[in-house]
Length: 87
Image (tube, rainbow, N blue to C red):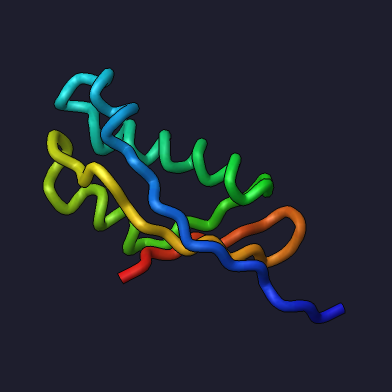
């Protein structure tokens, strides 16, 4: 059965949740928060995160990740979704 993949663009605010973590752990915590938010938004179990998202979060080192990030979520099937960075 061929059907179109559902796509939606979201902006995730990482600043609110990362203020509670120590500076030397912020980029790592940002990736964990990102995964949690994506699971809620995509309603899928498996999430394939593109390499460019990881590079964007770690671009300014571990202490100073970006406060907001725009992503495009594409649902591949019922259990899998793919996430890409919006440029």
